[in-house]
Image 1 (cartoon, rainbow, N blue to C red):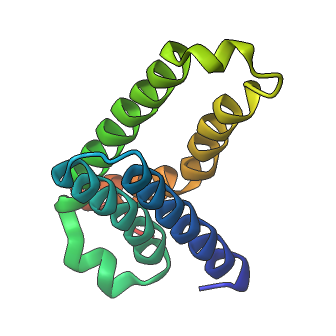
Image 2 (cartoon, one colour):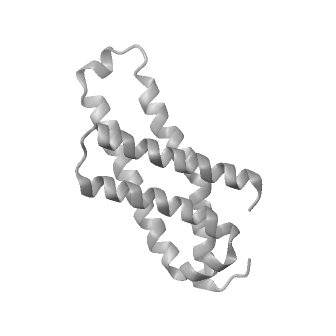
Image 3 (tube, rainbow, N blue to C red):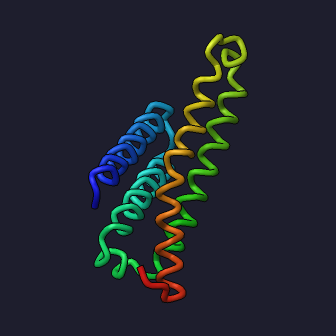
Length: 131
C-alpha cells in the first residue's frame, strides 16, 4: 500500500471516530452507533482490500452487500443529520450555520474513493475481472 493510501486510511478512520463521537454526543441509540461503526469499518476494509489481494480474495462477493450497507447507512445518517440541523431553531439564527452542512458534504466527498475501491473489488469478484 503506498504512503498516500495509508494516509487516506488514517483520514477515513478519523472521520469514523468523529462520527461515532458525534453520535454518542447526540445520544443516538446503541444499534445506530453499532451501524455507524460497522459502516466506518467497511470503508476502511474497502481501501485496504484494494491494495491487499489476499484480503480482497477473502472478501470476494461479500464486498457488494458491505458497500450497499455502508452507502445506505451514510445516506440515511446524512439525511437525518441535515433534518436535525434544519429543525433546530438556533440553526437559522446562527451566522455560521453553513459549517455543519459543509461537514456532511465533506464526509461524503472523503468516502467516494473508498466506494470506488468497493465497486472495483465487486466487479472483480462478480465478473472475474483481473487486477
